[in-house]
Length: 407
Ligand SMILES: *Cc1c(COP(=O)(O)O)cnc(C)c1O
Image 1: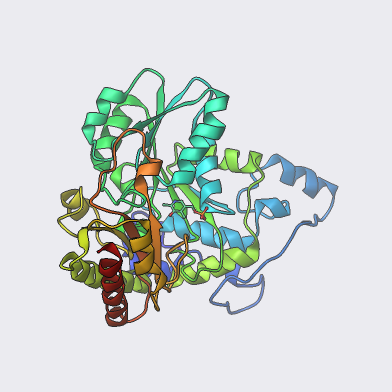
Image 2: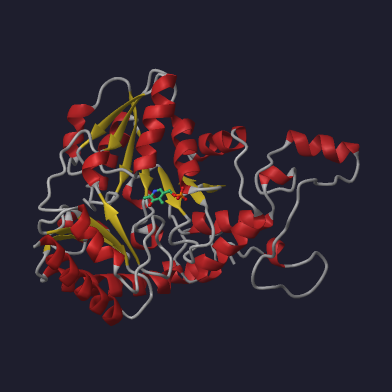
């Protein structure tokens, strides 16, 4: 099924989503005809060996994708990891983690050592910044934050100590699109590792490694799982960097439960159709919001009003369901009047599920290299799979409450 053997893989992403990770050895039994569609849930801690010689020999060879010890996984997790690798042309392998944050932390630890400097995008997911400040800094690893709209201008920030550049495009909360090809080209020239948090686009809308990124990180919790019921992260890397990522994951004892891996594999099969629907509905809502009284700006990479729109159009093949909008004036209480009365939007942090969410966001709190200046408070929306007409009607009433509270 893998289609990887025998040269260039010609399959398009939607075809890969349906086929990836379903190797015969994970879906059939030795000596028996037939196979099942989905690799089953293999639960294990102890792995039993045939004899002492077998045990010794197993310990001497690679434990990757081989039954060795429960922590190294079973075919359930290998199948998901393999599928994620297949979705990223240019990737050597994928390691799975119990959350997106664990994936970010382990990827950074795989490439940085004391004395190194990390360049971190100023619009990064806030817990990624916390890891840099509260874990890396005490270890003697310095983090310098940079403006997300810097492309090759990032060259001015490089020093002899710069070892890695962390990207997240579009940025969390504010959705600036980064010039990833310009930055990765420069980094390759200088021997600097690039890591990208690709949670928003997934490899379906932005194959990160094909754009020069060395290490692509996903909070699978969001779109891969897609149903708001599993926490998981992944790190997919090039042949040059996968061994370091794998080593780091093993040293930290990172793994995912087979049940969670199975649910994530299930989510992955429908990622393409879900993303297409999230894209259509979110664009419909974002375009409607753009013209409304009380809305100052809509921060959606596929709208020309978003910083980096031209880059998005050049590099991405689609847009997903998460974006923000800035209110025209008003305060915390006026924003709460909008959000609290919504019937079809939950209030919550995690996103990427089938249900819509509205969240008050305050980007200024999470910035140091750039200033966030806005006409009023901001709201982030996760547009789920409901009918967008219902969502728009709900938001219309919300904006009326906002305008009344704002005065
Ligand atoms: C949610 C999120 C993460 C972290 O994922 P968890 O599974 O919640 O730890 C990382 N990056 C981005 C962009 C996210 O939105």
